[in-house]
Amino acid sequence: MNDRPIGVFDSGLGGLTVLRALVDLLPGEDVVYFGDTGRFPYGPKPGHEVLEYALEISDLLVDLGAKMIVVACNSATAVALPTLRARHDIPVVGVVEPGLRAAVLATRTGRVGVIGTVGTVGSGAYQRVAAELAPHVELTLAACPGFVELVEAGDVDSDQVHVLAERLLAPVRRAAVDTLVLGCTHYPLLARTIGDVMGREVVLVSSADETAFEVRAMLRAERRRERARGGDPPRHTFLTSGDVERFRELGTRFMGPEVQAVQEWRW
Ligand code: DGL
Image 1 (tube, rainbow, N blue to C red):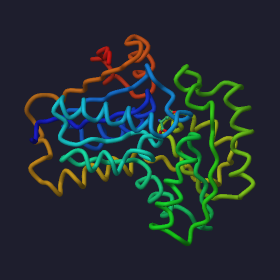
Image 2: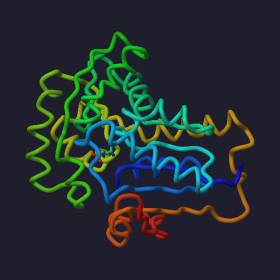
Image 3: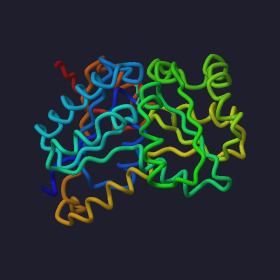
Image 4: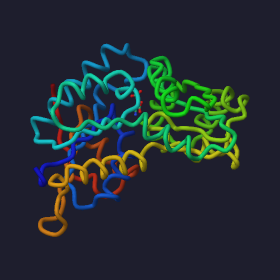
């Protein structure tokens, strides 16, 4: 069990922001990452379709020997987490609760913004978790259609991104939030632009670090599962349902040199 990989998936490259935090915190672990770049974006798709993809990918990760699954996608977490947990007998970690938890700790005024895809915002997942976790927090949500497509095109800081951010972030600015949850794993890649538009006094919270801590805590709780240090160097395997070269190029840019062994996956 110890030497089995942690399986991680997203609609594309965004989940690499979570994987970066995971690999930094748990450098000894083998990981298998699935980026569904052939079928992204998930955000505008109906929930049942995203659920179907999430089931398919999680089954694949289990077949590949995963000892744990990290749903490194808010849109998939929002519609599929309970179903995935019921389906698999290994731990399944999502990104909604860890991100919100970090925001609740960071806020001083209790006014927290959440930006995400149309699917995530419409699912009500953040509102449900906030009601349980921190009913005193005043949540303002805004969907940001177009952000994911820009990131997947490799554009994270052009004028076009800035203009779009000015428009899409207007509701959370108006609500005078002091903390903003980047409720889509692609958005940390736009953090500079989002930070510029929101202003320096607003804390941007990504779920990546908090999710990595949760994974480590779970591995420790089930002691035998954490991979021992030393021995063979860890294996980082990447599968994409889209273009392999493009995934490698943008993946290296967004995550780092670990993105080497990229394989094509056809359903
Ligand atoms: N990274 C996914 C998320 O966290 C992006 C969804 C999409 O493909 O639209 O929601």
